[in-house]
Length: 211
Image 1 (cartoon, rainbow, N blue to C red):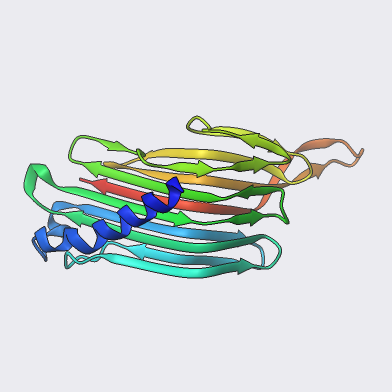
Image 2: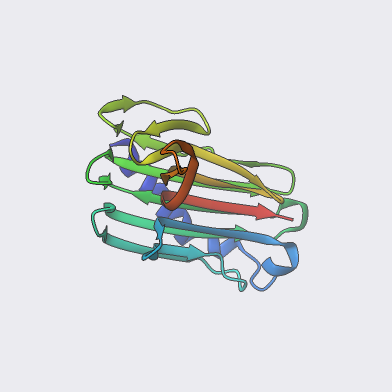
């Protein structure tokens, strides 16, 4: 399966790249990277797992979880997060990734067989190349290769942004699935005057930057 090959390549890179780094110089170069598999934030839940952050000593940050369950909001298998970087003047870079196997969000409202979020930054460029969603289904509809920042409404829930790509200072944040949960604001006459955000679910997030 393609996503398995991508996950293997990411893990292999995490083992090999540190041998070429210059420890202790990442902070001075402003290289930063972090990633996580699942994050849920509501009025009663604030959970992020697994998460990885690029250490300042030039080693690799990585974490994994074979099973992630957050109530009825998210279930995911084989979550892996890694953050790497290299400090070498104009050649400095930072890379992070989050990969997951099968997952279900909001009791099957959104499902996928695999998620890969990748963020890569150099001194003059940042991108999300390598990011992908395998067999993604949203509210009963197959969604293939969504363009960056594709937004779909989720009736009665809110909306979801797929392949979310957010420019940051010297870098990029990539959220492959970002569900925003909302509830209507009702006026005294029973009319809807707007929507209030009540929580969010992010699956597959990677960030990197070089300043």
